Amino acid sequence: MSYIALYRKYRPVDFDSVVGQDHIKTTLTNQIKENRIGHAYLFTGTRGTGKTSVAKIFSRAINCLTPKNGSPCGECPACKALLTPSNMDVIEIDAASNNGVNEIRDLREKVTYPPVEVRYKVYIIDEVHMLTGPAFNALLKTLEEPPKHAVFILATTEVHKIPQTILSRCMRFDFKLIDVKEIATLIAKIFDDIGKEYDKEAVMAIAKAGEGSVRDALSIADTCVSYSNRKLEYKDVLDVLGASDNSKLLELVKNILAGNSSKIFDLIDQMAKQGKAMSLLCKDIISVTRDLLVIKTSKDANAILNLPSDKFEEMKEISALATETFMVKVLELFSFCESDLRYSTNPRVLVETTALRAGLPQNNYDVDSLLLRVSKLEEQLKKGVFVANGSANINGATPVSTEQVVEEKVEEKKFFKKKLSTITSQEATAMIISGLRKSERYMLWAKLQSAKILIEGESLVITVSTESDYEIVNMEESLKAIREELNEFDEFEIKVISLSKEPTNKVLDEIEEMKSKFGEDTVIIKK
Image 1 (cartoon, rainbow, N blue to C red):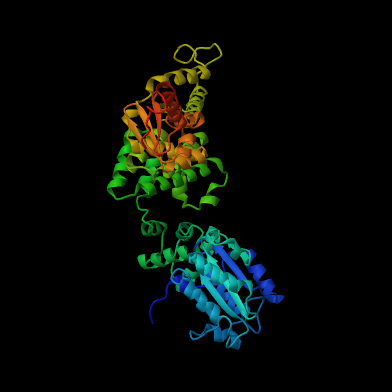
Image 2 (cartoon, helix red, strand yellow):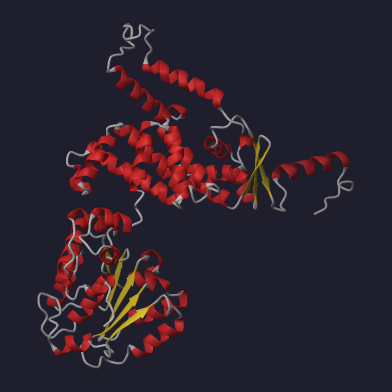
């Protein structure tokens, strides 16, 4: 017999064995107990949270002759009939490959025939959002006037793609991500059942890697079982997940928090040579920094993180290198970086500069960075330097107030402005587009999406296609917003050009002026 994957072998057969989703299990079992079966259900949620499994259990439960607490008994003739491969009363349809109107018309014709061996004929339509518009229209008619013996269960990961006319005719159930501890308990039971020895930390690492998806976690567990013939340890799971460079990642974050710029570039270079994608590196830095912030702020941090004791102690030492404010700033910078990477033509440079900005706030001139530097100065002063109260510091230097430090740095900023010509048109476009999106200037952002933005010397030239776009982009408020996104550069001119063949009001005024001067017969306008 061929090997069966763990997620298939341990697929739940009744509601009691479904992990999580208590709100859904309670509602469905109550409907079965009270015999209040609806004609259409919509199961929505991320992958691996139990949508299809619950749909199959529910299809058997509503046909079971002697249900136990709302679950199928598995022993009556109906349950046995539905478990056979030749069963024709529970039909599973993959909408991804059967998404046309002809397939749904065929369903409409067959749904009129009553079930062969049980009470209800059940149609489970997986990935229903993949249906075409005409197919949805064809399905709508069946949902409006379904036969009494038919029950439809629609499953999807993208509920926003389903028409409202379909949604309004279904009972909706939202499947949530599964708690890490529940997934870990399930994996531990499975390992005990198959006789696989394991460390508690290893099981917890697998559960965390599943990110709320039971199927994903079981797939990783399957790989881990094959990877190690001995007792499964935390390090083995890291190797399977491709996280063998975890120590280097931790070292990178440590150097960012310590402001060691030379080491930052060296570590990013090492990871890049090993094939680490910059988008994944950015995501990993965010994850590690978040864990450090949890350790820094939470009294019972390891109850949240579930790390091995030696790993937790190592991260605890690193978390002492920076304040909570500093870590929040690092998280913000790399979150923006993760968003901007999709527009960047050189992702490595973007990650490197973000790491440098995060590690060396003295090179940044935004308000948050200035406040961060002030808080660092205040922390240092508490150790023996007195300022702003007329006392001398430990070296006998003139006292300096924190307000004066901020004021001097703001003034200093003026001398460090770059020329617009030092960046490419693509970089300027990415900075403007991503900046407008973050500042929620959605109308201007939408107009510039289709515009062409070029740098010509110290001028920014924006070419739009329609006259309406020209009027919006050329507004004083819009130009000011664009300048704000490029405020790190010296003064520059913004030129807005419209490709529309319609002459602007200014051009029309000039034409009228020429006609009044030279006469209407003399002035000829060529299109």
